[in-house]
Length: 297
Image 1 (tube, one colour):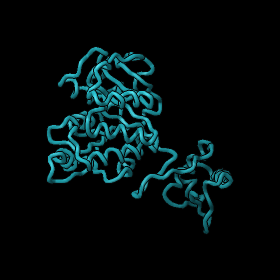
Image 2 (cartoon, one colour; image 1 turned 60 degrees about the horizontal axis):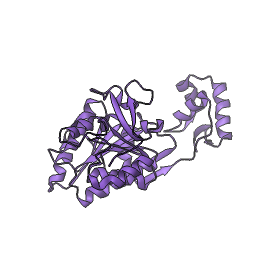
Image 3 (cartoon, rainbow, N blue to C red; image 1 turned 120 degrees about the vertical axis):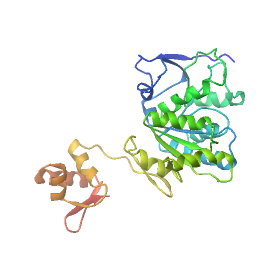
Image 4 (cartoon, rainbow, N blue to C red; image 1 turned 135 degrees about the vertical axis):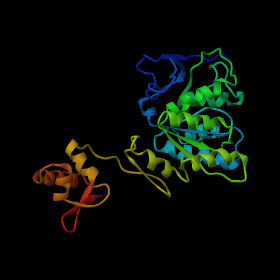
C-alpha cells in the first residue's frame, strides 16, 4: 500500500527529534507520517515480546494508558504483542504515541496493524529511518530499537525472553543514558526470563506507574500531576508565579517551613519572603500553620 504525505526530516532540520541528536549512530534522516510536537520530548518507551501472555498485554495497555493520561507520549515499535498493546493503551487514553518502523512506510509490518498505523498518525507519528520502498527484513529491527530508546526518557520492558529484541532496546537505552525499567513476570514462563534478569542486573522494578514517575521526575517535566501507589491523580493548574515565588513554593514541597528557614534556604531577605508568602496565600496555594510555619495547600 502506497502511503502519502510522508515527510523527510534531515539531521540538520529544526524539527529533527531532540532525543536523537546526540545518540550514537543517529539517523541522518527520518521519514515521518503524522506530527512530532514539542511535548513529545516527554516520552517513555514500552517494549516487549511479540508472543505476549494475557498478563503482559494487560500490563502494557494499563501502563501506557496511565502514562498517556499524564500527558506522556508512548514510544514503541508497532510489532505484535506488547508493542501493539502499548500503542492501543495510549490511544485509548486519548494520548499521543509514536511508532518506529523497521521498514519503509509502504510496507507496514505486521500487515494486520495497518489500521493501527493510521490511528497513530492521527494522534502522534510513525517514524522510519528507511525510505518508503524498503521492505521489512530481520537486520532492520535491532537497528530501529536505538531510535525507540533515543526518543524516550526511559524504557519499560514487559515480557521478554532472553534473546528478545526488547533487551536490545534496553541495552541501547543504557548506552544512551536512559533509565531502564522492567515489569516482573511469572518465574515459570520463558516470557519472563529476560525481564526478571534485567531486574537482577539493576533495572528499576515496576509495580505501578508511580515507580516509573519517581525515577524520572528529575529528567521530565511532570508539572501539574501527582502519582500515588493507588493510581494517578492530577493537581489543579498552578497560578502564574514570579521566579522568587517559585523558589519559595518549591521548598515547601516536603515539610512546613518558617520564614527564617525559607530565607536561609533561598537567600531571599526575610522581609521579602514575608511578602512572597502573603502573595502565595492570596493565590490559595499555601497556608500558614500554627507557629508561623507555612506549607502547601
